[in-house]
Structures are given as structure tokens and as C-alpha cells.
Length: 252
Length: 75
Image (cartoon, rainbow over all chains, first blue to last red; front, side, top):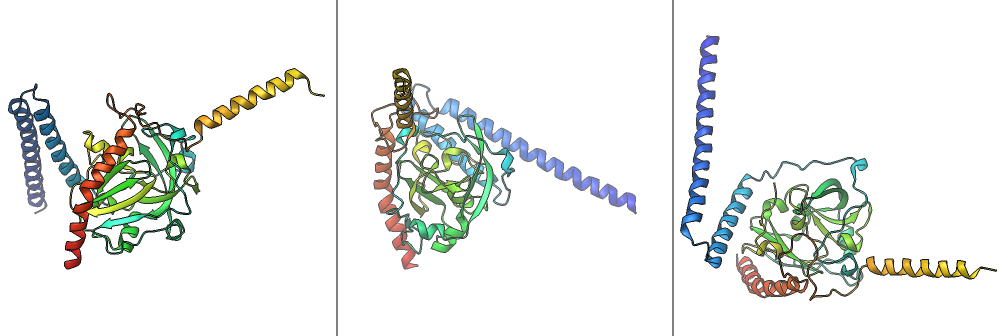
């Protein structure tokens, strides 16, 4: 009796294994086919054609990454002793050119598929329930650093303003002219936080005063600083670096 | 009485620290025609390109969002 159930279990396992290998083979063949199509479908001298094809492949890649994204899997968190000191400054401009945002007149503008579009002042944002995280910021340039950020869980903020959680994208505009956007699943991830503090102090200008969206499941350039406006939409918004060909999803 | 050497050293140190502070204190106007900082930039990218791209994007996204928001209100 026991032997038979073991045989049945082994047969089940073998079946699953074969199906898994078949799936992998299918994916491999699909990717090879895609690569072949890329090579044969356009002339390498046709810059625009190549760019369009690469962009289409990149968007396909975004879709695959979004499909693989696990909205409950958490990024590693670290003890205070692991914090990188000093935390590096990084932007497309020098540290002396960091935009200074006036706290008194600052208002976070909301638009798109959001029910309550009333702008938010800093005291109103600071009064929301806060959470902290010590996570690793990973830059596309190849370096990483651990920091402590505190603020309101982004999913709580989105629920409070009545954002349409079935929409696809959230776009951001920043005081330093930077733009980016993220997928809704990442926006609702428990570690995605709208932060107002760094190392238990009000965010200094160089780290994004008055607020930085901290997303430990994505690369650094998907973590906008000095946010002044955000919108919820179903239309792909892209972003500055994303429009230059950097992978839009850029996350795990 | 302070020696002239000590005063000169203090003056130099003061000037150097002021210059250092001016170099890292945020708030200086961005030089838009200068090349971008960082490793993400591509050849010939200037700091001002980001502002131009943001303005273009805002123009593109504004009517889309207005349309979407109007559609959501109807529902």
C-alpha cells in the first residue's frame, strides 16, 4: 500500500518535472526566436528601426518582469549598524545645484484617477501614521548603500486619497524636473514608502526634501526625490531615464 | 597680540572653508547647458534636457489624465 502511494507520488513528481522542463524549453525557444527575429527583421544600419525593435523588446521585458513580481516578497532589511556613512549623493547635477524646496509653500499635487485631488501640505503629510525601514539602495551605476528612511506607507496614502488601485501606473513629477513612473503592484508593495525622514532627521535637500518615494524592490533611479506631483493613469507615462532606453520596470 | 602669520593662516583657512561650503551647499542655480553628472548619461546629454523632457511629458499627459478623470467621474 505504502509502496504504491510512493510510486504514485514519484510519478506525480516526474510529471511535474517534465512539465517544468517543457516550460523552460518553450521559453528558451521563444527567446531564441525573438533574438533571431531581431537579427533578421531589421537592418543594423537602420538606426530608427533597431531602436523601435529594442524598445518593443524592452516593453515586453517590462511585462515579463511585472508578471514575475511577487507583491508579498520583501526586500532584505538591515540593523542600524549596517547603515552606510556617509550615504552617497547621486543625481544628474552636482550637490551644490540641489533644488531647495520651500517647506511653507510646498503642496503635493494629485491628479488622474484619484478621487480626492486636494493638494497636501507638509504638516498634513507629517501627521500621517509613519513607518521606518533600513534597506539597501541599489544604483544602476553599480554601487549600493544602506540607509534608514521613514514615512507613510504608500499603499495607505493611495487608499486615503482614493486612488484607483486597478489602474496600471503612477507617475511622478519632481522639483528638479525629474520624471518617472511605477506599476501599481509595486506602489502597493508593503515596503514602498513615501518618506519624509532620513536617518531619523527631516530629509536633507541632497536626499530629496521634502519627500522621496523609497522602493527597495527597484533600482535607485525608480526612487524619485523632491516629489511635487503624482498622478494615477492607465496610459504608459515612461520617465526621463526610461525614455532614454533604461528598463522601465527595473525591479525584482 | 596676534602675529601677522597667525592672522594670515586664519584668513586662508577661513577662505578655504567658505569656498568648500559654497561648493557643496545646495541651492546654486543649475547650469542647464553643462553636461550631466553621473554614469547614466549618454554622450552630449545636458542638464537642461531633463527640464525640456519634463515639459514635453506634461503636455502629453495632461489631456490624457483629464480625459481619464472625466471618464472615472461618469462611472
